[in-house]
Image 1: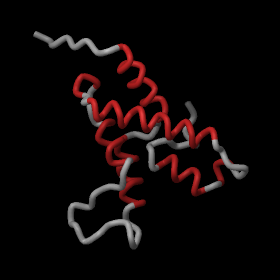
Image 2 (image 1 turned 180 degrees about the vertical axis):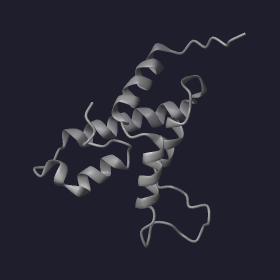
Image 3 (image 1 turned 90 degrees about the horizontal axis):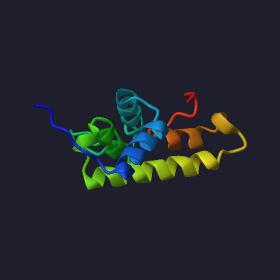
Image 4 (image 1 turned 135 degrees about the horizontal axis):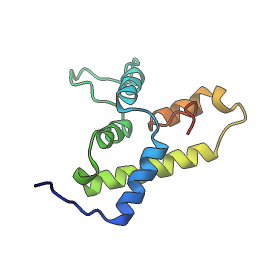
Length: 116
């Protein structure tokens, strides 16, 4: 028998908004975070190679099903939506050519070069 899970309508909206804003596939985000974390000061001697925050949390949510979300996951999604929208609204004069701005968005799983 299939389990029917009813989600709060607000969670449905957050889920949809999160996946609209986080437009980078999980594997691509993982590779980007590993690249960002491979700098001289980014990873310590820990062999676990912890990915940078908040990208690691976003990546964990991307790998979940809606019915498996925890309250912490929902907060990660809310925070990611807010941060992506704020950064997008602060588009620099150089636009997509501004690496610092674009990389800050990529750290959150949003690529400005991907069309919606």
